[in-house]
Length: 408
Figure 1: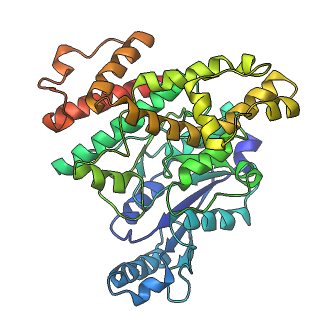
Figure 2 (figure 1 turned 90 degrees about the horizontal axis):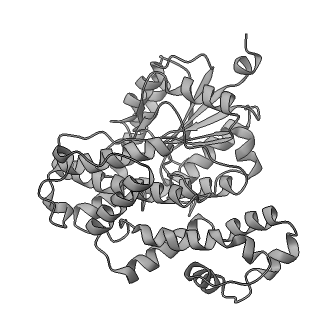
C-alpha cells in the first residue's frame, strides 16, 4: 500500500449563505465520490448577526436555520458544521462575508490536519464528477505540487439572459488567462474560490487567508504564488453554478448582474498589446538588475509606489539575478498587473469585440491551432456581442476553453 496515500486526507471546505436550494446537490456530488483518499467535510453556515434585526434579511436567516437543520440531520457522511448563523453566533461588526467564512473553515481544519493534508475549497453551489477528489489527491502526490488552481466550466441553463451573461464573463476570464500564460507571467491563474486546492502547510506558511468580503480567492492565490508556483493542470474540472447572485460585492454573480444591464466596464476583453507591454518589461529584468530602464509598465509602477527609485533597493538587498527577479515579481504582482491593464485599456479605447477577434488571431498563430471552422464562426458578428445568439457566444467561449485547456 502507498503509505503517503493512506495518510494524506482531503479537507473539503464549504461556506454557505442562503444555499438551501443548492448545497444538497453539492453534498450529493460529494457522496458520489469514488476516492481512495479519506476526506472530511466542513460547512460554515453564516451571515451577519444583525441581519436578524433587518426585515429585509430575516428570510435569509430563516433559510440558513433550515439549512443548519438539514446538515445536522444529514446521514450520508459526517459533516463538521460551523454555526455562524444562529442568533448570537453570526458575524459581528465588519467581520463578515465569504472571506471570513473561508478563514473560519481553514482555522477549524488546522486543528486536526497534518501539513501534507489537502484543503479543497468549494462553494455551496459547485458540481463535479465522481472522480474529482481522486484526481486532486493523485495530482498532488504525483506532481509534488503545493497549490492548484483548478479548471472550471459553467454549464448553460434554460434562461437566455443568464447564459449570455455567464458566457461573456467566461470570455473575459479565459482571454485574461491565455494572455497571462502567453507572456509567461508568474500570476497566471484564475481566481475562483470553488476551484482551489492547496496543501495545509502552504496555507499555514502564509498564515491563512485574508478575510475579505469578496476577492479573497484572488488575494489568496497571489499570496501563495509569492511563496510557491501554482499548478493549473488537473484531469477533472469543477462546474460552478450559473446564476445571478448578490452574495458577494463582486465576483461572478455580481458581474453577471452588472453585465446583464449592459455594463461590462469592469470586465473588459483586454487587448493582447497591453500584455505585450508587460512582457516588454519582463524581458529586460536582467538589465534592470544592473541599470535603470524605462517602459510603460515601469512608469506605471513608479506612479503606484510614488518613487522614481524602484530598483536600487532591490539591487542592494538581492545580489543575485534569480533573487532580484523574484523580488521584481513580488513588487509587480498580479494586482499591479490588473491595475495597469484597466488603466491602459481605457486609454486604448478598443471595443471588446475587436479586442477578442484580434486576440484570437494571435492565439491561433502562436499556438499553431486550427482556426474556427466556417460553421463555427459567428455568422452575423458586426462588432457587438449582443448581436450574437447564445449558441455562437458559446462557440467563442468553447474555443477559448479549448486553448486554455491546452495551456493548462
